[in-house]
Image (cartoon, rainbow, N blue to C red; front, side, top):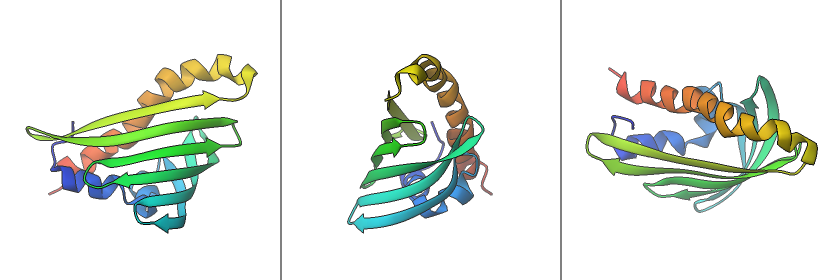
Length: 140
């Protein structure tokens, strides 16, 4: 829950070019390589588990709601489906986030599943949601 109007939250989460500035613990760089209306193709350098790695994203912006993205990370042999959708609620905006990951390397599944399932989501919440909350709720 973010105590801010849905439009303000939407404007920040869909401004991918500013993501490295707004969320430096999540993204090092983001380049939109193709844009057709609300459909974007993005090449990103993202941060997780103390490392930076490339991710290719096919993202659809859903006006006033957020975005849905299918992501590929060849370095780790993973693909994922991400949904960051907003809902206007009394007192602000509810953030609904889902990230489903498919780990292609069998040996990595044993280690990565618990890390992605709990640790990575907690780290993402701290680096993204808490930062978003600070940006919007503590603004003077």
